Image (cartoon, rainbow, N blue to C red; front, top):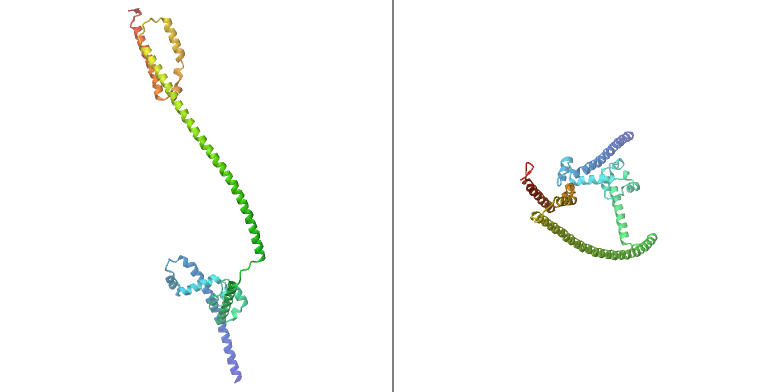
Length: 301
């Protein structure tokens, strides 16, 4: 009878051990799926339209936004590490209450794999109490400056004082330079005004000279035109006429070659030359007609 009971108990333990292994494997798969799903949620959230996140989570995973947030936090803390996934979903969720970055140390200092979810929860609360106590101690502690930091601060104070002196020296040099620059600018302005005044005087003088030259040329034109139109009372001999022609050609021989010079002249000056030439041409034509009128078949009329 006792043997039968023992065998029955042994068989029950064997079945329970098997079920325990299966439960551990399935729990690990749940934890891994949770981390992977947290990864999916993390990638999807920035792509979902504003205000549609809760509906998207419900439609595509059948869970609430709060659970999705827990899965995303778990992924952010543990990644897709199979070592953490082996601890199980419930323990991983409870460990989210730890200060961020303390997961590795917590797992190393506690046999999380061998602890129940309730024991993990208690250990996490104890860890948080330690951190809160440490924060209170730090907040109540008078600030202390380490010796090395104190010496470093003194050295920096000395460097700051030296730099301040150097800046003062540079500022004084710059002040002198600015004064010199202001003086140079004033001198330059005075020279510029003097130059402008001299330029104005030169311009006025040039305009007066140009006007005088134009008046002289106009006067010469009038004199030449009057000479051409005046009827002389004395007789003109051939020798006197030949001398006058030679003198005219000697003075004006370069005119047929003055194309470039004429091109550079203004219109009024070219018109004055043209009027003088017309006067000469008219005088020459009248003189030729006077000679031709006295000639017929080579005979004097």
